[in-house]
Every structure is written in structure tokens, then in C-alpha cells.
Length: 85
Image 1 (tube, rainbow, N blue to C red):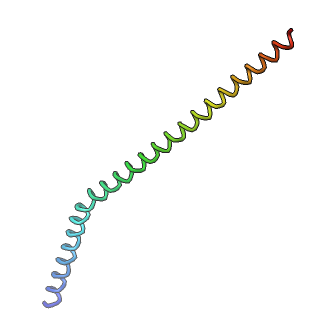
Image 2 (cartoon, helix red, strand yellow; image 1 turned 90 degrees about the vertical axis):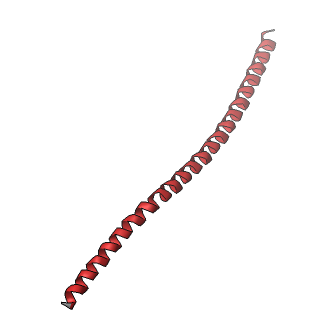
Image 3 (cartoon, rainbow, N blue to C red; image 1 turned 120 degrees about the vertical axis):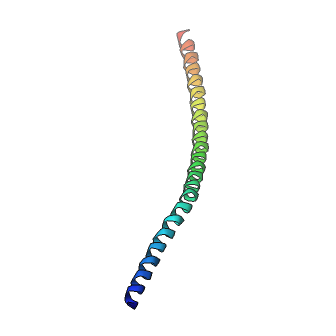
């Protein structure tokens, strides 16, 4: 009879442990989701700022190249004008 009581008590403790684990997981899940969302948002902000910086640099390079090509065209046009005379 003593073994049956111990088995029943052990089963009850196991069931209580499983129940507490489920409650703990239910309490932790929203906190983990909020943490992951914050991490994702921070990463998106960093990526956005890096993308903006890269876009600015590409724009600066494109502007410089455009000016260089225009200067080169003007120089060639000047050379052609002097040769045509």
C-alpha cells in the first residue's frame, strides 16, 4: 500500500511539473517575441542607415563621373574646333 501512495504522489508531482512548465512557457513566449521583434527592428534600422549611406556614396561617384565626362566632352569638342580651323 505504501508503494501505491508513493507512485500516486510521484505521478502527481510529474503532472504538476509538466503543468508548471506549460505555464512558464506561456509566460516567457511573449517576452521572447518582444525581444526578437526589437532585435529585428534594430537590425532593420541599421540596414536602412547603411543602405542610405551607400546610396549617398553611389550618388556622389555618379555625379563626379558625370562631371568628368562632361568636361572630357567639352575638351574634345574644343580640340575638334581647333583642328577644323
